Image (cartoon, rainbow, N blue to C red):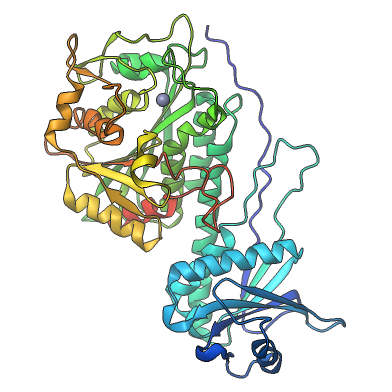
Length: 509
Ligand SMILES: [Zn+2]
């Protein structure tokens, strides 16, 4: 049954604000003044602020103590340049970190949105003016410029804040604010595309849809892109990839992107990104329980994340070559679906006994990981919403990394720490492989007993990494969607986490 089952989608509704850098405070709805919290409940007011007196009066009472993330909005009558002022509490200056700034900026965004402010100017001075801090502030604001409401009738388009002005009288600061603005807009766009992909319902977000969208965006970003069909996958001997999709009427697609930096680079390294793109995962014959099964439209977020990271890397002109391979297919129940006990041959010749059809991510990744070696990369990094077990092991405050090279894992961890998108290593002891020995094939895809699930998933995939290849696997199942505790991520749906981290990794590796 090869009929196309992709429904026609509509354009997304988010729109990034216009961001400009100015040397004077222009006419806007609201002027924003960031304030540090002083010792003994005193407030340190930016030198020479025309709001000094007002802040001092607030500080005497409990109206505004500049506690981290607090926002005090003051509305003035009259027709002055700025009708209103928002005081943003930054907490104690000695405790200031980039992440605290990101969070405070997100709180500011929420307040401005609630107050229906459409244009705002932020005075950038003191600690905020450092490049790393200005970057965090812009990220904390712009990562909020997202909504997924395109299927709602009469949904509002765009976002609350349409124009943001960064103000500094210092020419050096103005120059780096211009750079950081360009970067932050590129970050927000790439992260939002990742969120859009993750949130797309699977009747619209089919393998065919993502392949077409990958082609469309790649053209815009100057990235080479081609798509392998199931016939191509068959020629490549990708038995595991095809087996997973054989219960779905929607044809699987493998997207292959290649970014090359402009000009010749002597130390050009190649990073291969490999992403899991299960557009819907019902578990197959080993069917999942119905509770929260709707979330399984997000099971392609590994692919969405690496796609966003590749776009961002291209926008930031990173100096390395990136080959990104995204495997899209659907895991469904059907008369043709794979059955527990089936034996399937992988691209690398190994045979796999399917114990649990819901352990399908590792199957499609095994074949595309093997395929990734053909591009002669220096390292392979895959990302996948692979196991529910990773939530049990680590909760929602970090993702798991497993792999065969400490230097590679450290580089990923460092890039993650820089962006407060944290990554924690789990072990890959040889003994875990014993659990995946099969009676009827070279390997089995699951031990089906709920122990060490995240590690076993990685150990399985490690059997498809060739000798000498450096490889790391990110299990992002706990963080890819549903991160309500991070103020600059949406309360529900795709988070867009690790887009920044993986683009930085590709740049610095
Ligand atoms: Zn599954």
